[in-house]
Structure formats: structure tokens, C-alpha cells
Length: 403
Image: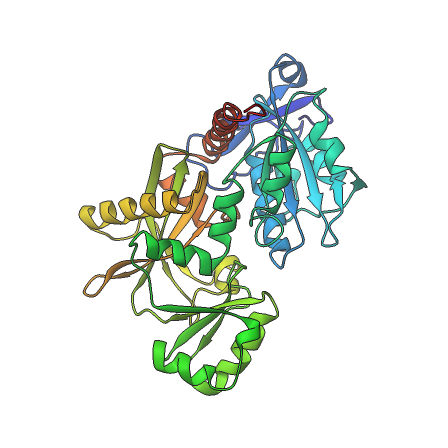
């Protein structure tokens, strides 16, 4: 990357970025030592021929399209240009893959030139040709895609068929974690505590179901699409008169619906990083600004985030142990954010869900928790890329066509 003055950006100390001596703004989620940018001549970048090629996928055919575009902006900003060459590739809401020329041009001016949210638009690109082109080196794909058609095993299946390394969980781990009903069934099979719940197909909506749910789970309760994130399509139901509308809303996002009891407890999350050997971050606590941690709370800074969460050391250790168990039970790899409810005087730690491609926005918990744990944004990118390569090599050793 470089600017019109012939200089590139890498993490480090802030230096002059133009003849007018403008200073560099801080990058999000950086420690004090690496929150600024410094300029490096383009010939230094050119002298780094072993840079790894990264394709950053974002956008997608999901109600979480906009969140993905914001997450991808901050992933692009954190990638070290001395180590990686970056190709921003958007997926439009219609499913077209595009080379995001505007994002690439902004990167040439420096990470701070990127808009707050990327736009999944640009020149058309054939996904198979893109993934098959190894002239510039075999890529590692970072699928910064949230929700269905991206986080649910679909993109992961394409990348497996093309034999391309990618960040995050594989097909099974992604699919299980995305589907709240299936993940809850896995947790039950592994004796991992969770809130009481019911799951069913939208075809099963019938007279009498609402009364059955109220009798089984009590009020208030939460109604959710089984395959969606960012609290989209989620309703908190405080009286049975609102239950029908909540079920109908959830059914507009997915044919499978999950209904959960409302837990009176603390909402606490941690970040998991690794494949076989797992690191778990410190905990963060969410204090919702609304009735629950909804879309506005998550992405408009409506909630208070307590990092680190006020926990005793034994409480933190227990949560981290359960997070590892849940991660392995769902066959996750690379990364995940583990979400819990905590009833200190009741049932203790209750797993809510694991998110295999958590947000990377400025207020997202996943990178914030790692920053608090001592892993800055650029180092986190390095770890994720290395985990992708390690997993790809390990799986390649088992690819056999003979018998």
C-alpha cells in the first residue's frame, strides 16, 4: 500500500503522512504501542516478496450484510501490508462476486482512508477463477461474512471444494453453530448446561402451540429464527398476546424457529482462538441498554460493555473451561465468540450460543476481548491466518482418492 507521496503504511509509530504534517488517527482495538500508523517507502514493500495473499470476503446475501461490510473495513485496516497482499472481494445482496476497486484504492492511500463501512460493489469477478488463480500465490480466504449464505457452511463448502485455506470453522462446525436448534441438541448430548428451549419447523405453527410454549417455558420468553445472528428477527415476548406475532416474524427469516426461556442473570462473553489447542480470552460483560441485547445495542453502542467482566478467578476459569468444551463439541476451529448467561446463585453458567464469525466492528466484543488479553488487532490477524494454514495442511494430509 502507498499514497501519492510514494509511501506505505505498517503498524508502528506515527510519522508525517504528508508535507502538511498531518498526524495519523488511532486504529481501533490497538494497544498503546501499536495504535498508530507509520509510513514506509514503497520500495520497502516491494522488497517483501513473500507476502501472503489474503482474499477478504464480505457483504453476502444475508440480513447481516451491513454488519459484514463494517467488520471487513476494520479487518482490512488491521492487516499488515509488509506481511500480506489484500484483495477485497464483495458479495452483493444478489449474490454477485465483485472486486471492490474503491476499497483497494482507499488502501493505497492508507487504512484511515477507508470509509466506515465498505460497499460491496465493483467489477464482476468469477469466484471459481478467483480461487483457482495461484499466479500471485495460493490465497488464504478470510470470509468476513455474517449469517446465512456465509457463516453457515455454504461458503466453507465452496472453499473446501476449491482446496483453498480459509479462516474459521469448517463446513460442519459452521453449520452446527449457525443453527441454534442443532447446536442446542449438541450441547444437550455433551451435558453442557443451557437455558430451557423448544425448537420446531414453521409448518408446526398451529392453534394451541402458544399456550403450550407459555406453559413449558413461562413468560417472558425469546423467539428467534434458528439460523440468523445479530439479534435480527428476535423478539422478547412478555405476554402471550404478542407471541403469535413474534413467531410469525421469526418465520420470515428462517423456516426453523427456536423459543427460549428468559434467563434472569448476567450476560457474559469470551473469545476463543485455536484449532486443537485453544486459547480463551478474558471475559466481557454486556449490560443491555434495551430490554435485551438487540441489533441497536450491538451496533449503535447502546449497551455498556464491561471489559474485563467483574468475576472471581475461579468463575472465569469455569467459564473458560465450558467455552472450550462447547467449541470442541460443535467442531469449531480458528475462532468463535462464546456467549453465556450466568446465574451466580442459581444454575451457574448457561451456554447461549457460539458465533463462528463474530463481528469485527469498532465495538465488537471479539477483538476487544483479545486486546484486553494482550493480543492486538494485527497479531490477531496473524494468528487467524496461521491457524487457517495449519488446519488446511492437516486436512490435506487426509485427502486420499485411493482405497
